[in-house]
Image 1 (tube, rainbow, N blue to C red):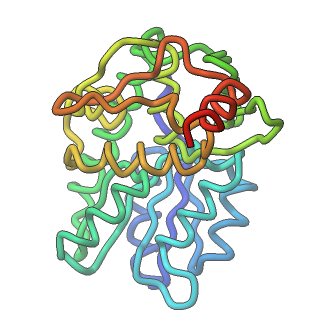
Image 2: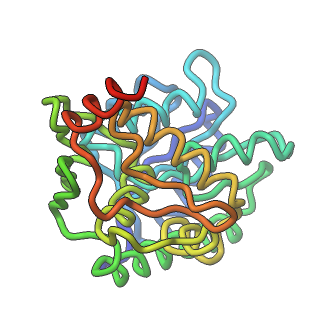
Length: 250
């Protein structure tokens, strides 16, 4: 995988975007800036950056909402995001990472630290590519679900197509590609979030809950193994058989 060459910087403070644009251009990276959420979404779709550096505290549409909207579009859902925050409270960091962001940097920004964090993100992404044989092929058929990596989506037996945020998809794809295998929370953190990521096992639980909520009637495909972790059922029931069984045992 080549080094990242396109970065989108999103911050409502012009002096911040100018500093970061200069810093990244010195690294040889193409840089585009945006000063508000709607412009950021538009430029993300047009520019298709390799990475987005996204401020949280912006007027109007904040960084968390921008990130959620990026995740809702297949063409931008896979773009890694590094949050900038002026607040150092732990809750901000936890919320950002549970949304699926790669990392965060607290203001005031040290350009050297930021470059180091970006390089660490890219190393994690390369490591993820090396584990693709474990994670999943392009299309995974598990039970009556078909997962498609290109669109971060799943087509269900009942005809619905649902879309996942990038880390949600990576998590369900990893489990579905290895049915019956139990993954501990720490193992899932290492494979999905990377060794150096600042996340906790609770992050895995939050993502599994979001996946199950989207799967609805198929939530039982992902099984909790008490005190250990999660696995994808080897032979999950179809919707028809599950409905029939529930009718017999209300």
